Image 1 (cartoon, rainbow, N blue to C red):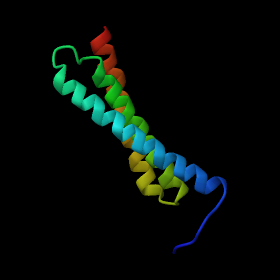
Image 2 (spheres, helix red, strand yellow):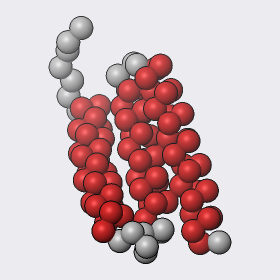
Image 3 (spheres, rainbow, N blue to C red):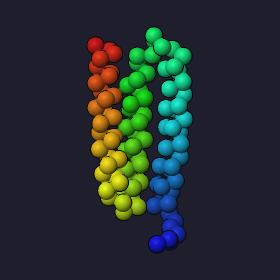
Length: 95
């Protein structure tokens, strides 16, 4: 079913789309930095995992807004795993 929306619902979905594009660019740039800074790139891994967690979290929120609860739940689970990976690698690198 296709229907048009306006107002806050549409604006929030557009904000999530723009944030996803920005986070994807950030992840790509960090990946390139990791490739070039092999020995000094340890601190970048937790940042990449954190950006991936935020990307999945925003996508999960958008899925819930579109009434796709199973997809949203899977994305929230992926965000939780990436958040754990970010914390684990952060502790490993800094500790």
